[in-house]
Length: 479
Image (cartoon, rainbow, N blue to C red; front, side, top):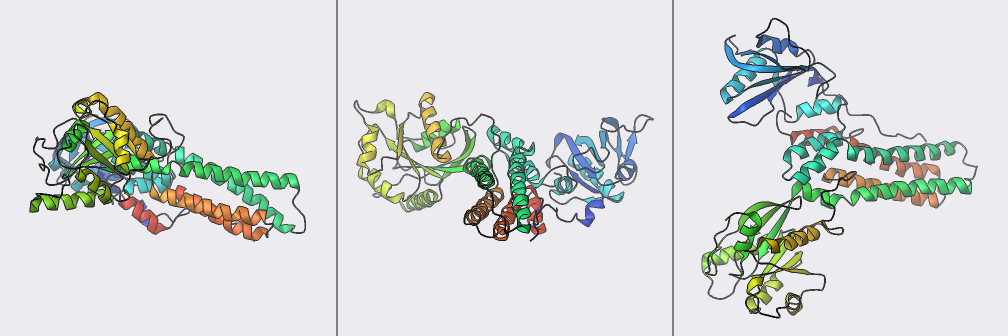
């Protein structure tokens, strides 16, 4: 049997030899706009719309001042140009960047002129796609580009930048290289099936299986944290009317996002606001207070929406009023929360009577000993820090928020990466079981090759072209 060791990249699209153009800056008016032109020999198209203010031609990787021309050869703008000859560019092709004034009319005129000179409009993500096929980035790094652009907190951007610099790719490749060495040794023994494996060699090979397993599990352990950094979390504030949910949301956001009055039932609909809590982008949802008596029809609709939000929440903050005793509505609401992850927040702790015991309240409400509780005063920012730490700890799971700002070797943020790592772990477990049971090396190799295939797909060494198309279609145009 011959190992496949999957490391043949997908076929390069034929249209990668074409010249493509797209704005690299967001649509709209701005001080500066950047327009990219890419493709082998694309300087030919650039030269048709560029007039240098100096007699010398533009030098590679240096900004040159000049004028850009429209389709009629008239001056369109005073601009800067940077030329990056292959292979020393983002894409690995010849690449030209125009830096013009950020007028939508100027950008449109420049792109029209470049298309008239032989270029076409780029597809979403086509520049990064070309960088991948030209070996400038592996697939995990290419996906990190999109994650970095979409990051909403500094911690999320740090994790994405670490991936772009190759931290995850190096970890995955280390595991993959170890499995290739292991597979090569097992495969070599297929030619001599009658020879038994010495005890020392057997222990060494089992050690290689174990090392790979631990490394894969270590990467998978970062997936929950990575998903939160990339996608964020939905945290719902629930409680009976007038417990201070809106005041708490405003305090966490740092601005008056929700209307606050002393009258119960003010919030009739959900109100959302995004905050950064210890590096996690969190959407806070202030909901209508839940009560059972004297409910108007419009308030009833708000309560129904509250319960829908609770069912889709990553975490529910059950907000209680520390200044008054528990009510039947508090108890009834706990029964409506279902299996949602829960943090009990006793608000208005500055008004709590002497001897107030929030943990006793949790027991009285029938909550388990694992449910956390914290006391806050929405008007006192110092009391919010323990709340933020508890929110991060519950969202992150084991390990909590400690060390969130420390550099990590690698973090798995993409669902695709986590799925392929799980596939590799499962196949590796089957291969090890076959090896320990002294089954034929051919059976071991079937599962080892499957594990290698899964790891190779993370790096793009072997991946379906439909998957590639789906990945790059999610990019913005111009990146």
